[in-house]
Length: 321
Image (cartoon, rainbow, N blue to C red; front, side, top):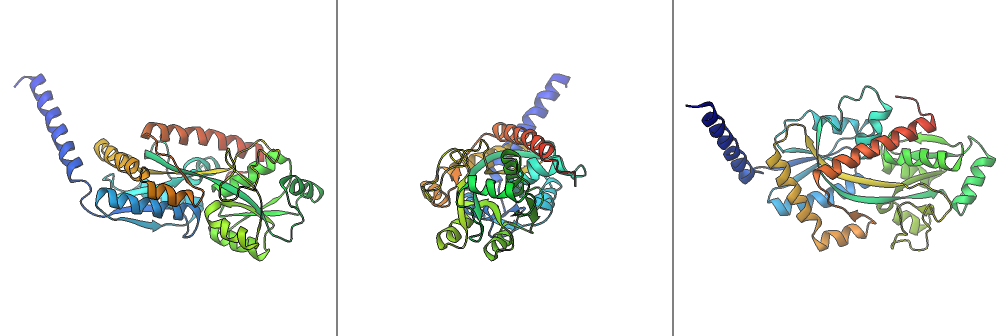
């Protein structure tokens, strides 16, 4: 047999195997790792999208919360899992763009050890203070912080998560000195804010709105390019006079080496899921906007975000962990 014929036969065999794999996938439930605690924005959005995905592909997506190290632990699990499409990551900025810039010993490279499938959503963060803090606007908060350098503090779900970096970005943009207090997740930090243990924090809109409406915390501004329809009276950070944006973004990734046909199958399922009017409506109620991007677009976003946060970390003088 001529070498060319062998190559053609091999190529035909590979294509046949890939088609067969695509047709049979998924043949069992899929594990979706959410590298954050229950009740936070990552968990809330992940569960809504995972339920929709399960209905589209005809297999259950089992959400598994793996908390720790600002998302590093859960992300490492996925990066080191078999590339068969049955263990996926519901990723966000912390472990994908921030932690690798903070920790030189991060046990994975998000741009090499993971395959981007699609960004699925974005959601603005809201800046809140405890009612005891005498500031009813961002400008008043900045003035207060400047009058008490190092005396005010802000909470987050851990070192390196998006909520932490939103606070660091605020510090740099406003030129204030406030102390970071990390918690083991956004939910415990929110509880601490309501209890008055911390002065302020950024958090996702969905877990914050009930407490804003109840008066247990006071909202000052929302991130993103426009006001939220859920809190239309609340100005954006830009309207409040500061040129920086605080917004969370979320997407699905798979381990490196996952067959292209499976990535394509998952991408198609995600796009179909995000097109569902009911899902979009339910997420909109939580101030979450569905996105849906190509694998290449999502990979590019991760790269660009990594470069942005590297600069913020350097400007803020945050030392590597």
